[in-house]
Length: 294
Ligand code: GTP
Ligand code: NA
Ligand code: MG
View 1: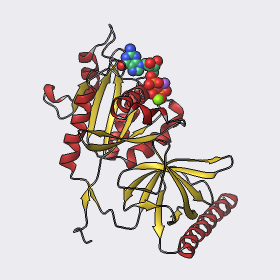
View 2 (view 1 turned 90 degrees about the horizontal axis):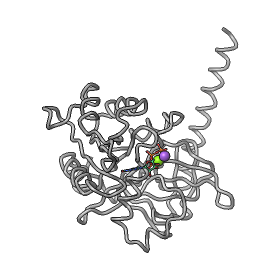
View 3 (view 1 turned 135 degrees about the vertical axis):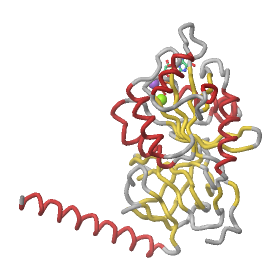
View 4 (view 1 turned 90 degrees about the vertical axis):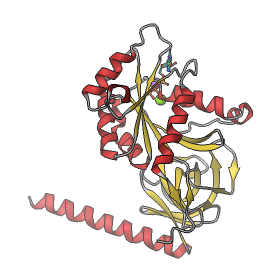
């Protein structure tokens, strides 16, 4: 690989934790304090991912649901991420999905920061959370371990700058690099069929620059990028490294976690997708044949 074109890329940070521990509130608070009010007002749809700036440096965040039913989504979230934030409510402590998230985070093998949220509450108990996490192999730095714990409140905003600074510190250590001129490669965070628009995929760019007109293949789906909406709801011509947006132009809805790659020609994109679809069908067929023979 020729690394001479590599530049630093912003970190992709996934927020995980038990249901109602404040993941979305935390992201809303970060966004409202770091994005101009006029821009934030333009956000109309549910957004699973967005990029902010802290002291001139970009950070891309991915939100995940804490509900028990969304385990697969959390596992996918863990796989696109550079850094994982585990949110634990200071009044509630470690719960079932917190435990699940700890194992995803360990498997993802990336830096973990524990955000102890709801510190504004009377019943907040930071030491309780630290003890519960330490018991599960997440020992705080100030207790002799190697995990950073950041007490904060998504309600008041206290501690949020500490969290962002810590993310940038961890990111620097990771030396995240990519090539903005390489063949575009982006991971699908979520996708759905939208009335009047067709398949829409929310992606995070991992390498290269994804542009309108790019011929793309994504697992067994393919197409040409028709329109890109950025995380502020604005129409843009391209998405750069670690940026997130919604892509129109695929022929079908791709699965979350699949990787979109730009190809030279439309034919190449279609051929790759078609071949993959045929392989997938053949595999399904051989599986069902085996089952019926047993
Ligand atoms: P799921 O996506 O459903 O898993 O929940 P979540 O983790 O995104 O939690 P959400 O942001 O929806 O917050 C759950 C509840 O906690 C809401 O009623 C919030 O207002 C409240 N909440 C979140 N953060 C804080 C905080 O720092 N302090 C207080 N007092 N309440 C908070
Ligand atoms: Na919630
Ligand atoms: Mg939420």
